[in-house]
Image (tube, rainbow over all chains, first blue to last red; front, side, top):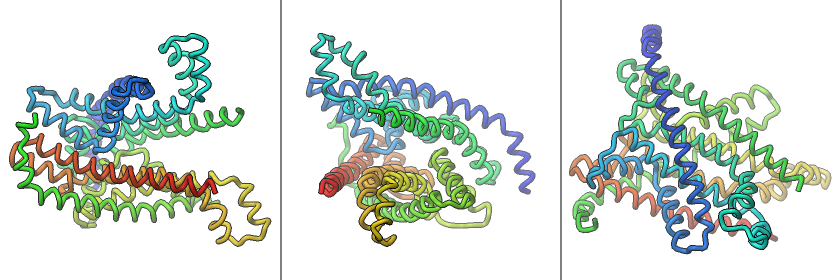
Length: 222
Length: 222
């Protein structure tokens, strides 16, 4: 029986590849949008405007304090009540962007905070504009602190993309869930799903670890 | 929007939410407890000089960290019955949650232990301290400062991750929201209420974690 299931699993393997592609597409797209949102809000957190800081803080805590599953339900089921009907795929991208953005915001804000105060004062004293300060003085130095956890966050984003399967996006997890209804060998089916996620995430985790090592070596020279 | 919000329905379903809150609470606590034990064991194994033992632990840690929790949950939920192990949904959920969280905790503890400089331990040996004394007076006080903040962070993650158990029909907070939504067709009431409960847990854990961090810094300064 096991061999029979194995054979049928091989027969539906192209579906898994399609699911893998959807997972990569969703995480890749939302990785870009979340990074943009995260950097904008992260930089905004060190702004002088109090209201902006509070608004960003509220957004970050709201999204960090609730499970992603609940957020995706809110976007997918509640927005239609206000007349905004979204297909599963764009709904997934929006949910992932807001969630990822909140986490990246914290990472960016922490990175900016780690830049010595004197650097910014020097930038002001040299007469750089606010944009120039951030662009040429603060961010390049903050990137050292930001980069390793940012890559770590990308791993989380790929993994969290599995949750969008619940609103019907045909990603890797959804393909596995549908397959297991036909081929009741859960370990086989989700073992395969797991291996595919592993192939994406493991190299990213190694990259994050290597970046962290490199950055800390650079720091110890100071 | 507030005028459309039907508080009476929420009041009707309040028992459901309280049962859910309680379930989320105890499931998270039990999983955290098991994850701490698992994480400690995995960490000790990972640091072992025996290649095989540390290899087994590395495979466990890396495979857990590189695959989504939802895939792991389905792996056990659909997989265990097919190899003849029948446990209920709550047990399956706790199993997946603690295995998943244990891998992260193992890495956190490892980072804590590795953060203690070798020279300190050697100095302890040289001054004739026993292993227990070295652990009590040299390693733990230094490692705790590194370990406790991320450990509390993973407790917060665990609470949020437990929301996935709703997908294998465990009655917890998210499930309570789903039930209200599907019985009354009121997704806003259902999921916003769920979100508020999670935010309350998050706020409480965050206050506790900030307090604990302050305490630890205080101790380190001495």
